[in-house]
Length: 141
Image 1 (cartoon, helix red, strand yellow):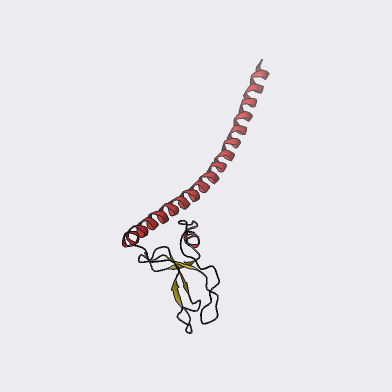
Image 2 (cartoon, helix red, strand yellow):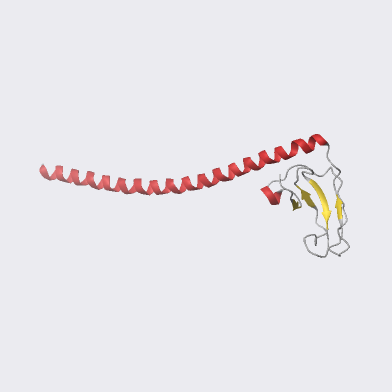
């Protein structure tokens, strides 16, 4: 898994929250770094710290920053670090598959509507032919 982090939680990455974090330590008051920037709570999605929240200077990717960094959550046990990345990969794969299926369903619904229109046109032609045959038979009598 690549080294990445998101602001708040996994919703930004995949559209779903991955657990109840209410039992974890959470700073109630707002934090600011030495640069004076209010710090959002970010979430690490690296293999080493999957789902672990942290505070970091918002200027981190810029030349000038104060290097402020603090973990919000305690370090996970080794077993969790082994299991969680694999579960996240499986979850992401399932979510990607589901998205693809929804796209395919949308395409199929469009095709279905096109087929319905073609069937309706054929039914009109068939009715016209039946009327023509009926009129022809009546005129022969």
